Image (tube, rainbow, N blue to C red; front, side, top):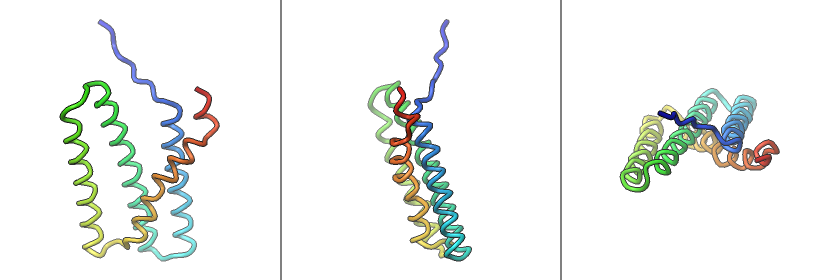
Length: 123
């Protein structure tokens, strides 16, 4: 019996670090120039960005291991849950839409930073 060892790609690790660093920079900016409500919105946006990246990683791994089929449904359900959580947070008035979007912006920024990271290119 053999066991399968999942090894993380260096580019993926760099992407997680890039998203976290961009999120930290956005949080510092929100702390310096805006109030507590904006900081909370950015923080929630960063958490949503990191968790979305993790869920996407799991979906792609499962899709590649198991093939096509039901994973498309799981991806659609993930998107519906993400939009539902954002809608609830915004409609309740607890968080600013702009701050939430700014925090979630750490995802595309972090992907760019992670892809440009020198360690990621050593493969």
